[in-house]
Image (cartoon, rainbow, N blue to C red):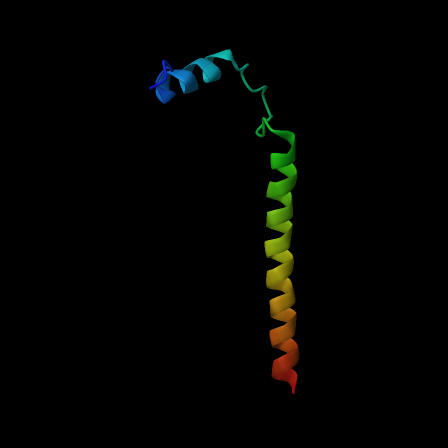
Length: 60
């Protein structure tokens, strides 16, 4: 369509042009690491806050 390559070919070319990830590097996009860590910390703190809240409610 409109003289463009199929999406599969465009994705394959883009991936072929990327360099390999270095050993020990898991996130190729910098902000992805911060978003991942924020979500993990948010979930853990939310669970801890819920646990504390339930413990306080049970004491009464």
